[in-house]
Length: 568
Image (cartoon, rainbow, N blue to C red; front, side):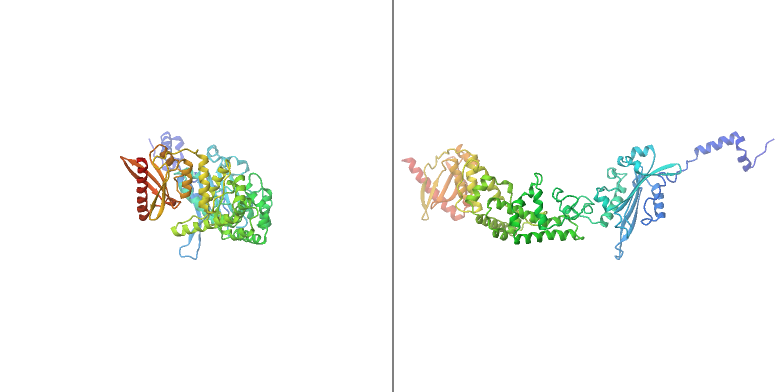
């Protein structure tokens, strides 16, 4: 006899029923496991409630726990510029999970901006896997974190408010950002974008310099000395917050000159010049400009603060350059040429002592300033005429031109005076001075060698349009160098021309008209025909049609005379 038990009684007596027990066991094994609601942990709320409400934080935690790794982040935004039709949303706080650690960052609420700059937190569950995965600097400081027991889990929490003083004291890392976030192309890409939006919001909330690589460089700035990056050997850290940019303090910078900071040495040598009323006033004006820009909260560029200060230092360097050579230079020259002294780049270290003595003995300081001013004006005219877009010197905020011909001349003069004395040029013009020294420098570097004179062993003179034309070949390499100086072309300094003459690959013929250098001719012979390879006038100028006709007539006459000499 059998009885069918009711359902409730079957359940009540299941422990006595082997088949039902097996069936229940099978059903349990085949049923899907219940998914945990918080696989990443239901962490404590770390963002202050006056920044993000408790319920919103919990919603974010719940959401992040359901996401795949690349999307485990949540931004708490707030509209800004609400007066505009489409208000921009700004990230005021962020919460995300990355590599077994929760990270949070937030900006202070309205009214608490002076209390702290930003807040951050890291939260992680204490597991063996977490200790292996989380970045080392977090794990290494685990003893300093709060420890909280939630259910069967232990959480470590690092939560801090970072003040301006903390940043001044050196806390300049972006603590809200996981260290290796950008290294994970897939896993961290979306999180990194959200974190960057928070970083931008923080940058908008604090004074910054757009031209600095460091987000907190302006907050760390304790005074104008630090903004100008004056080394602590001149202004100590204790003085930086009270140090002011006055003329006397500017002068004092030269008192602590060391081998490392020798660039301030020039000021020590010319303080008497800058102590005159004119230059004290000029200098104070520049220093006041830097101070005013430093105090301007709307200024976003550190270089703007430094430019007037750097102009003052540039003038010191330029005047020191002139003063070293001409210590008796009248003050008026400096006062009347400030524009050129600021706008021309001259290298003081390049002038050797022998060169200083030579310039002081032979070159009047008035001639130097004449060359200086003329070169500066010609550079400006050349730029305007050709429409060049001259790059402004960023450190000075000025257009600065290189005084290249002067620098080249001084370098060559240094070389010449190491071997011999040198007579001064006839006139103090930069081109003539340069060529005069260049010819002597070339002679020192190149030994004097005889050159063949097969075409014109002696000068041949002919008459062209009532003028006396003389054709001749240089008898040695030094005469060729002197000719190159006289006509201002490269034939005298380029060794290839002399080498070609020695090897009889071509002729170099020099032409004078009425005793003055006029043309340089390079000729070749092929199949009994002599042809002009190139002919140049003064400063490598090409001949005009009239000059070419005159040259053709004159050279033809010279060849006839030379042919008659050989026949006799």
